[in-house]
Structures are given as C-alpha cells and as structure tokens.
Image (cartoon, rainbow, N blue to C red; front, side, top):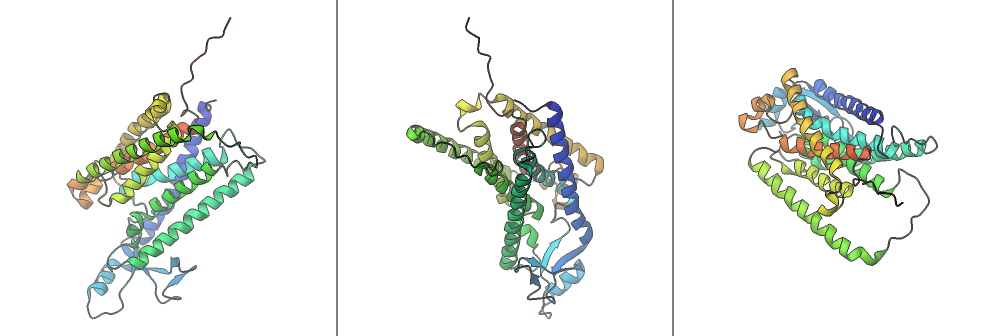
Length: 349
C-alpha cells in the first residue's frame, strides 16, 4: 500500500530539516576559516597527523602569509594547505551540496529505520545499530581518501579537500549513500534470519543478458551526456564527481524500475515523480539564490559567474539534475510508488 500523504510529507520534512542542519555544520567550518587557510600543524605529533594517521592537526594562517612563504625560494619549510573557505559545502554551491545529504537521510529514514509508518519497536535498536555502522564506514572511508589525497599532493597551493572530491561533504555523503544502498540490498536493515528459497535458475541466462545489455546502454548514454555537458560548460571540469552521481542514478534506476523498457512503461507514476520532482526543484534553488544572494544554485548563478567567469555560471547544472533525479526516485520508492501500475481485474460472476 502507498504511504499516507501525511506520512510522506512528514518524511520529506524530517529529511529536509536533518539535511539543512547537516549542511549548516559544514558551512560553520567555512565560517571558522574565513579568509584564512587551514594548514597542517607539523609541530604536533608525527608529521602533524594523529588517529592512525588519518586526521591532521590543523591551524588557521592568513592566506597572504601562506602564499608568501610557499612562493619564497629561501624558505624551506612550506605550509601544507588542507582546506580553505568553500571546500566544505560553501554557500556558492548550496543547492548542489544540499542534495546528497538529503538523499542519504531519505535512505536512512525510509529504508533502514522504516520511518514514519513501518517502525518496529523491537527491531528499531538493531536498525539504529545498522545505521551507526553505515555512518562509521562512510567516515572511515572518506578519511582514508582525504589522507591519500594528502599523500599525493604535489602542488603546495592545491586544496586537499578539493583533490579528494571537490567538496569533502559531497564525498562523505556519496560514501554514505553507497553504504546505505549496500546494507539495504543485503537485507541487514530487516535483521531477519529466515533464508529465502533459492530462485529458479532456468531463466538466469536470458535475464542476465537483457539486464547487462540495458545496463551498458544506460551507462553509455550517461557517459555521452556527461561528455557533452562538460564540453558545453554545463558540468564541473573534473567530470569524475558528476559522473559518479550519474552512475549511482543508473544503478538505482534499474533497481527501482526494472532492467528494460518493458518494465519501465509499467512504472509511469514513479518515473513521473522522479522527473517532475527534479523539474520543480531546480527553479526552487534558482529563486533561493536570487532571494538570498549568497546561497548558490549551481546553475544560472551570478555567484559562480563572478567567481569563475560568465562562461562557468552553469557548471553545476549536471550535478544538480543527477542528484535530484536520484532523490526523487528514492522518494517515489519510499512512498511505495515505484512499482507497476495495478489494473483492476474484473471478478468472475
């Protein structure tokens, strides 16, 4: 049965509030840095790193001091720049950075906790434990990625957070989404010890061929699309970030709506929610930027035009579209509208 409209609205509101609070934390990091760099404090511990070498000791230093020292050939000890304002979900790309935590919280609440209408009081503590494991896995993976980025850094003026994945918050939540989907697919959120009977393998060959054919067809489509968007300055120059979300979209789309068009045409309501929701989300962030003047949408953006040039005012469009296609697709599944349309079967007299 579809989720009640009131429950669906409550789920959406709770996810938005949690994502907004989450993004405010990252914005707070930007506020703390101000016009300074966060640099690695090499005076503390072994090369300034602790917690198994994953996290750095940091201190803030004015940018002009860092630039002067790092460009002065007579100074041997250079500053190792860790981050600067804008690396942690900066206001200029708020619309993009808001989307991925929104997806992750939707998965956590709707599929892992069963919120708001399928919470089993007996299973809730175990589901919360599963969620905690996902969070821990996500944090550890991203700390390793940040540390690897630090190891490979060669340009003393480069920003480690951006090398690790454009925005550390985007990277963190990308990993959170992957782990949430993985744990959900493994069935750990149900914590059931009942094993399902083995499926009939007689149709595997045909289904596998069809599934892989359409999987690679969709991957080819999004690859061509991403290349075209990058060439036309409608996506980030570092295509890996955008492309990773498009790949997530392909995987979730096939999981939600089936692996060939013969299944997709039976799931028009869910696909419509995905498309219409995305089309409505884009103008909301566009208007938000025009009203606030500081919270960027990532496309048609005066903020990006001022910072990067008028030709780059739309570089967030690809990421915005892919993120919110995934979000509204997940929302359609959360309210149980991703299944096939049920037709009334006339009863026999």
